[in-house]
Image 1 (tube, rainbow, N blue to C red):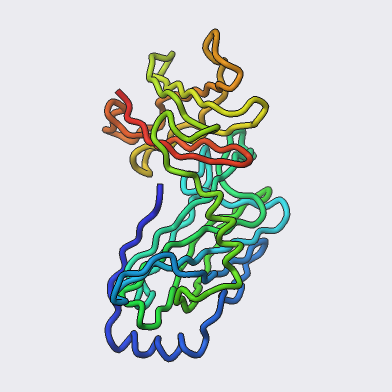
Image 2: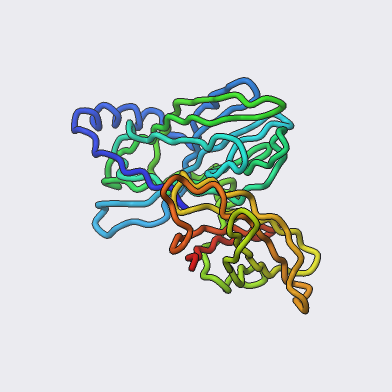
Length: 290
């Protein structure tokens, strides 16, 4: 699931002012903005695509979050507890839209008996930045709110800005490595060695439950995460379950209760986003519940 943020086109006066700043301060990364136990900066990368005539372009950029040892931050869906980051790019100049991409997360104990989903140590969130006009300077400005957790969780924020043009080079390897960990979007049953092969709904003790079958190489650990059709859904984390009798050694089974639905929501017909993660691969599958 990608986050798309539409941006209003800047006025001519604002763009003119920003153009001077961009020309003077073009670089591959912004300065680190530090908080206790964390620091964050923007990265500029290469151009991904351009439109003939120079009327638009998509440039690679990124948000790098550096955490002290033992500290964590959250994925777009935080799990049993936690707060996902929020992104405000509205003060950017000559930028039409920004898509935030999410590298594969991991599960960790939340200290209250449950589990959260996120990142430990350093993480780079790739950005796809769409410019209004590739021939003009662009300024990426981000107001970021996020949470970091050690033994306690604390809120953090940053106000970052960086000129982008698609000509960045020094941070391309870090951005490419982060992009490689973004789950591939594949249909149900597809994906190669790692695949989500079946999703079924059945009755449970208090709530209906969903059973998910995942194919993975023997001995390779797999995590499964599930999201509802809107952020208001707070589904529990899928847990490993005994595979069906006669299942092959490559088959894993996970189960979760259809609990945590927002008021008035119905499971029937809802589209779930399932993310399967192994040490060297990650896939994302959308599946509609019958």
